Picture 1 (cartoon, rainbow, N blue to C red):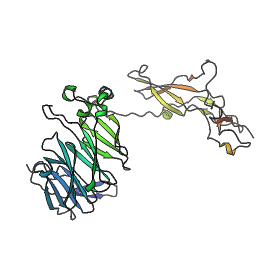
Picture 2 (cartoon, rainbow, N blue to C red):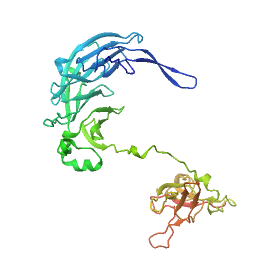
Picture 3 (tube, rainbow, N blue to C red):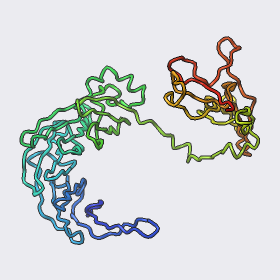
Picture 4 (spheres, one colour):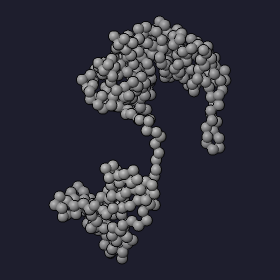
Length: 399
């Protein structure tokens, strides 16, 4: 079987944007390798206008000139057999090309091989077992390598998964490597499993360090953190690149596709409820419009009270009908704290219960649940109650 190179770089497209802002990709050209297991990973140099792709079938790195994208031209094919059994990833930053190459025995440590963009060998650096993917940090001072550490089929050799951080800030000739493994999490296996991280290798006898298999890395734009995907473990590893330490191992959760396609139904309460309860009428400036119940903040669904046809919710209105804060420096005489005017000074805090009929969309309000202090008699208001800290509650009056 012949395999063409299909990627956004080597199967070359151009983009057309219509007046309706619809983007359309049109094929320009392709480069044919005439091999299976070829052109597996691709990187692009915008400076040289060249594509660099790896092929495991013949253990090579190929350089393709696409300065004229209509007619890609092979510049060079580099034999990678002196460095290992086969390449898994390639990345480019300015004048540097980095290639991850696994060892002849896949469970042994692999290599990262550096070339310039013309294909000249620069140096090679040992990394962890089965380097599966690599990437440069945004500033080009580091290369991060996901070392998958796969076991052999018999599970008699199960190397630890790891992340190698290669410092090339002083140039690749003096590159130094820090490899991070997961040994510090070996005594947290049960906790990670309970959290949702999938650790199961060798009939669940593998350690955390053995079973975690890093496969892909992305770096934040400021270069401060790296996020490492461990696919088989359904987990994401967070690394602080200033200290080269693991901050956390996060589970990615599960989705039950047997439940079918979800749907969303919106209920707009202001449209469904015609007559909102009146909370009160401000009396300043010869009277103001009635203040209606509203300003809901937060929502709780009560499954125990709900049925197939009715959903029951609880919500809390805001602290009460109030106005914007007035700075203490704008008052005469100056106030000890900022002022918060309340339109209804006697407003009492409450919980609102409402029910939605899922068949008709009708929304019904239950009587408000008024809130009291511990004594059962003193109403809870939205006003501040910590002197010297909270805003001072005030009430508008006629001038």
